[in-house]
Length: 195
Image 1 (cartoon, one colour):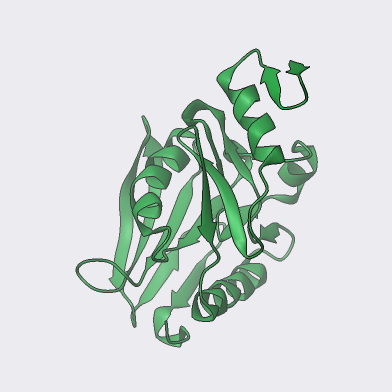
Image 2 (image 1 turned 180 degrees about the horizontal axis):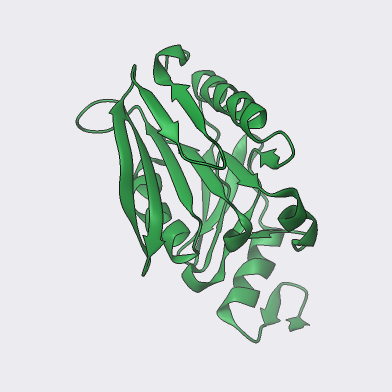
């Protein structure tokens, strides 16, 4: 990769160019930067109620897999989809985390990603990320969507094959959702903070 005139590069691949651009994109304070399908996006951080829900699920996952890494906004790389995503929560076996690159975690290293849809991210969470995470082979994708057209729902996607997940479980907010082993965890959505 050659940097030309300080602001432009000649990269070997689109991925290298996207990674270079993402690393140098400055966003306003309180925003997050995610390359989605090759386009660098900037979105505002979600409301406090969103962060409360993230914290609640994070604590439950830490208790279920105490020796694994449970991280918020860990950059997850999906080069085949030209994406670097920042899931609300990423769960990674500790040995995979230590083997990861310095800037991004290879998506295939994640055992579970969790997204909590917000007004700024709901469309991407429901469509683009479902296919990106499945194509990367992430075993489980848990989506909490209080903005779903048919009312607030929690969907567990699993068994990725050919870039597509199967819907493992779908419950309305207020009902419990069960995560399979190695998590062996039931999350009671009735315990969620008000969104």
